[in-house]
Length: 135
Image (cartoon, rainbow, N blue to C red):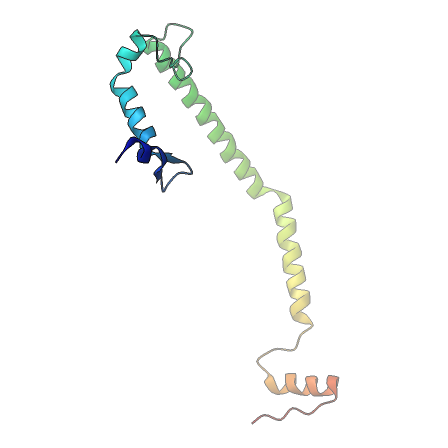
């Protein structure tokens, strides 16, 4: 493949949205292989991607940070459990359940039992002034 072809032939990442060319991949590979030389010649500036810690980070400080974050996460989990528990005991849930039960009993009490098909058909015939013939 020529450089001209490599510049225009797209390579699509099936999991991503980007489409890059083979030339881009080769260029990135060359930069990674020669990173030390390019930095020495001041041709590569990776300061935008470099992570710099302000304080001198020691293993102890990192462990303290990790423990602090774990404690915060544990506190949040405990408060979430308490909120879920309070919600389950909440009176609004009980009121909602009572309302649903009341509405369902009202709805079911007005209707004729479905098991008695003859009564349902007679009621339908009387209400609509028709005669239903079953074959």
